[in-house]
Image (cartoon, rainbow, N blue to C red; front, side):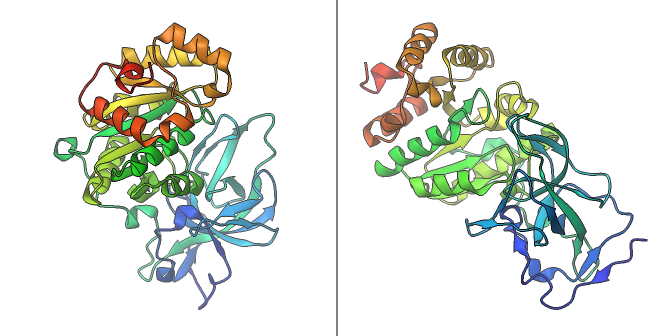
Length: 362
């Protein structure tokens, strides 16, 4: 049976809503769809926390990390997760018990987990939210207007990629944003791939970005398993939104590492490459930095320098700089308005990536 169950007035008032559902107009919810139903990617679901595990808090649309307790009702979104430090998870085949696999609010079925990660928080779906016309509430219904052609986008970009999650990509991006904003540049920021989560967005906002968007604004709770053409549309849509907002330059982050399928596609996509002025590569060790530089070169991407956790080890920095020929930019340096604006100017001008001399660091 798949007969919708009407929602009582105020039924969602005490439910804890997640970051991933922040664009959704929950006032349109009129019923719950339960029974023998297959969830779809992006469907908004009301669920009950049955047992706490790895995630004990839920990121709210306002930015607060809300404590969870067994019995709490939460509004989250069906999606996927690719996190080598935590879980791989997919959209489940039914409305049976599943997991909260990201603090941003992703409901999914875990496939594998890192040995150091706790079991995922278990949730019991109560039903997919329906509107007055018995249509499922889905993130796609509140997405930005899709843009598919990169030719109309004139916004120059500097992108940050890295060896893996937690390699320092967001930190590097935020400090570059800080430097550019302090220099008086109207800088925007976008996270192109990953799993819906608020802290990266808020860090970029706090750093001084005039406008920040991520793939959830394009209607995707996550990008693991998303088709190549849709990844291209996400990229074009977010860049067009930053340009519409009056940004002069955009700092982009591509999630995960260079061997992750969606990352590989994004870095080689015309939508990504056409407005690209330069790249920073975040790594945690010299070997990762060397391999990253080689990969980006083989794809024809304009590497400007290294960044990330590598900066914490002077010896690793020495090895990486010697082996790659590229400078390492620390967070402090990227935050410097003179260096950040010089880095941006030389990148946009198409300078060769010997930026240490260009930026006055030699």
